Image (cartoon, rainbow, N blue to C red; front, side):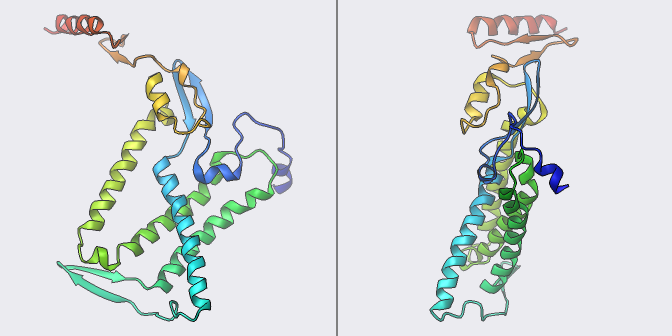
Length: 242
């Protein structure tokens, strides 16, 4: 299997390299027809926050090693404490517990990501998916550790509120990019607004100027931004009503 994959060294139109994957620099075009396109692109919010979690862990780990060399006992505390507030019991994790849990996730990420730097074959964004899974786990572990700190335990509703805001943003971004994921109807202007990087090379000119709106019996019409056309459309809809 290794020899077969190593032999795929020809260039490819949608090839990307491992350094691009954690930052979601480029996706993959799968299909395009009839003003629609299927383009593999991840959710940028999930992608970038999970990468940020990896960077934060590496920085904190380096800092903790410096503290260990200076004689601090950050890893000596093996106990857990429970705090009670408003009927909620929160397990306050120690640094040792945090380092172990996040470290295992980061290790899994590295084992699934770093070997690709040894490959000269064609590589694509989907090769990062197994590593992304561990990066998301690391993000959740870090958030869990952060929300057991005193700033959050003193206000138990703060963590759920921030979590809800994050989920809403993730869902909103997913919905905005769903026409690319599912080959839905999209406009050129919406496509251009969604292009955060120039390397996100989905083909915006292939989409509609205005999204067709269904009227009846499977027929469609293009609704222009022109005021007169809007009035004509409204009148035609009223005539169709009994």
